[in-house]
Length: 354
Image (cartoon, rainbow, N blue to C red):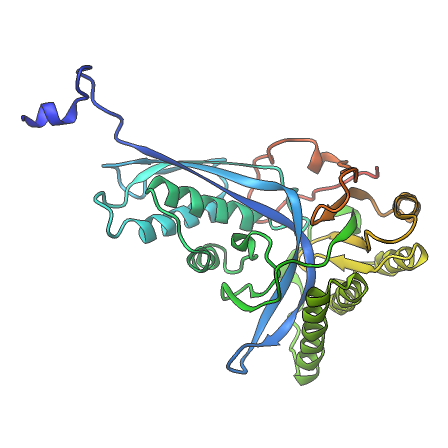
């Protein structure tokens, strides 16, 4: 058979498409339940966090390899997703060894519906989705620990979105799991809101806090309590841990509405509050078994509005209330796809009240 015959498709005389398209998806989150400094198995201090899963919003990526082109010939849409572009290049380098085709260029398309700049993992979701799409284009699946390692290299720190909602204490700057806390967090109903009128938090400009032994002891105590809350399904204990972690975070974040948020939570019998430690999103946590739950939620929403704290959505995680309504408001929730914008700095995702 001649080389020309090998390059054509039998019966058509046309050259086949020298490309392979892969897709990937990753969820977002609703900030953290716990964040601080912890001890790993060797006794070394490291930063860690436990995220609150958010059902629904996420990032989707489609990557089309173009064999024969240079790996530098990578087209990204939107063009300003620089972290995602780095992730694609790293993923190609990880997937190409052992594959008959060498690393090549291609086209990467990213869409998503996670509000940007609120601390809901939009950039991590992009990166994880891209790594999965590139791996899929090579006909393979990368293990979560490999995705985590690549994500940290692409954006310096990442959220544990590659673990798909499992409750873990995750070292976000190292891309590794410090502890698997259990199968699932206790079921909670969350009244989501945005502090600081939804303006993003520039974490690089925040003062760097030197953690001492007292900080480690406090965080390790919260870790033990959270482990117990997961094991027993104790929503009240989960709320206690989240509130304590959020209050510690205020030593750096200094949200002026934080005391109002906790006052509203206590007024309507919530289990506690949680915040994003790298953004403005926050939530009031309710036990789904609490009597008069819908009345409490409605009253909580009105009280937050009265305190000029814009509400964003009400959701349950895991889904425990089939009729629980998800509310979306403000520019950050009006588009299916997030608008094109630089990874850094991110424009404020301002939300109007419900």
